[in-house]
Length: 357
Image (cartoon, rainbow, N blue to C red; front, side, top):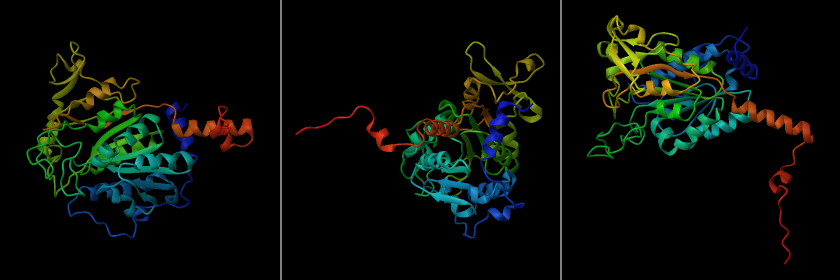
């Protein structure tokens, strides 16, 4: 018997028309010249998304990309789907309107750390808490690239940039922690240069019913080159990257010599060297746990400065009612009750005034 997650996902998929013929990566490439700086991590993400889209089996006319403002927000130009390069920070709101009014569309949002977490902060958290059926790709390069190198909401404390010549004083956001705190039902993190992992996370997000946020560590080789090098260099990555897999012990390091355990005195998670004595205490990752407590604790393991002990993969994937479905049900109920809607009566309500002068 399929579980609730599968039934809900299948129900939503049935609303989106399938492609009539088999598609390839080429079908999702637009005729526009790709204009990012040579070596930018956006190229890798674009190629991964274009290569993954045929897996959805959906008609490309029923796939939409909505972006805000920033380097990453040029994305819709390069996808041979419908799309919109929208307003600074407002992509989640515009995409919410589209997803709720056109449930026959697969709606994706492309945004950056500045676009989503500064001027767009409220729009992002409310789309997540409402659980709108959106797939949000948050490109995090920890810098403002389009406007030439100012510090962003994810820049580390002390970051010297054009706008912080003496070092940033701001404590940075952890986008994954923020999303979990906003009650997002799907939260994941991946890296631009790891094509296999990036594609697997995109696949999981696409299969999720409701709001899915994927943070993508993305290198800006012009204004913040090497920001994630510790996660990309093979020798360093073995000790720094914690690859999360649902149902598997959280082990990492060379030969799995490190693990994540819970400190029962404080309730926090911590990294330990694995021994025969403590191996049974190593946490088994449960992305589907009802409580977000452990997922949030996992998101806090990464140090903002060194990025050691950075979890990547799906941190949380749970089900709760999807906003689009709930709204559609209300509309259907109102139509059955009233026959047709009366917008004027709704706006006026029962409490009106008559002014006699």
